[in-house]
Structures are given as C-alpha cells and as structure tokens.
Length: 119
Image 1 (cartoon, rainbow, N blue to C red):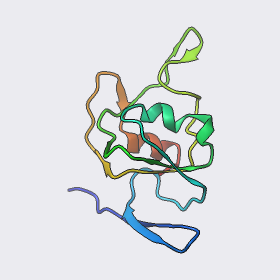
Image 2 (image 1 turned 90 degrees about the vertical axis):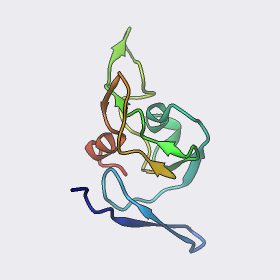
Image 3 (image 1 turned 135 degrees about the horizontal axis):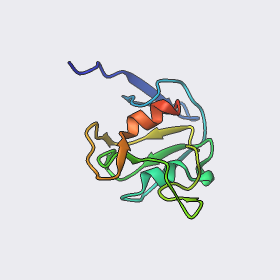
C-alpha cells in the first residue's frame, strides 16, 4: 500500500500560496526561493554551497529518476557532489519520480533528503 501523500504550502512574501505534495523530510522551512534550469546534476546542485539555506526549484520537469550516488572520493575529492552535505533549505520540483534506476545510485532522492532532514 502506497503512503498517503501530504499536501504542503509554499507561502511567498507577497502572500501568494502554492500547494503541492511533500517528499523527503516533512518540516517547515523558510528561505529565498531560487531556481536551477539544469536537466541533470541534482545531487551536485543540492550540495552546492552557493545554494546554502535557499529553497531550490528545479525547472526540469522530472527529478529523482536516477537516484543519488554514494559519497565516494577520488583523489581526496567527492566524485558526485560539490560538498559533503546538502546545502539547500528545501527543494521544489514539478514531478518527483519515486522509482529510480542508475548503476551508481545508492538511495532515492527522497531517502537522501529524509536522512538529511530536508524536503
């Protein structure tokens, strides 16, 4: 049986309210809303220090379909991440794929966000 999807709200400074389903950690956050237009590379974007404490919107319509790799280092540097932790305060996507498939994936995006208490 699939878990019931919870509805959360994005409340903007001008009073606009946008509703959507939550995945990952289920908690309230605040921050500047910014966007990324990349088609791939969400693990890198989530760990990019330039997005620190911001709420990141991915404009590409499908996110999560290739999961998240493990934190492996090569020559002392992380291979698939910009830093060793998720930097964003929250994440907004149009369509989240619960099912992922990639040879290098260790977790789903939701599992990674949940383990880091982000959503």
